[in-house]
Image (cartoon, rainbow, N blue to C red; front, top):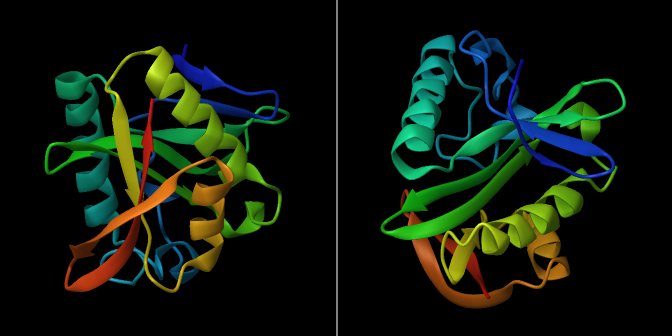
Amino acid sequence: MTEVVLETPRLTLVMWDEDDAGLIHSSIDTTRYLSGAAPWSREKAEERLRNWFEERKRDGITKYKLLRRADDMLVGRAGFSLLSGQYELGYSICREAWSNGYATVIAGALARWFFEEDFSDRFIAFTHPDNVASQRVLTKIGMLPCAPMTIDGIVCPTFEMKR
């Protein structure tokens, strides 16, 4: 039985299964704003899955598999990671699930969960400068702009939320 990490009326976050690598970032639609801006190879997806398992074990938190509750369809991934000593909210929604409000729903639910579980008093999120939709999601859930971060040579709009 897969452990449910967080549920909303529409979405469920669960830990990945070891054989889920083929589900992760296999199209340019979901990777154009990520580091490398290219679909992930099977090897990269397997490595990232291993990292998420290690993060969960070490930090008690990671990026989780995001499912639609109605039918367990994969919607994407969402959660937190430690980045340079700061908790960072991140999510990616599968192309087929865009325009349903899932990013806003899960980002807001994760923000509440993060503070309820008392991971820290603050977290950040950053976006590619061209990812205006994601920037809107972050402001919708109440995050405020802060000093930009440079990720892979790109100056990224960065947001923070405090308890």
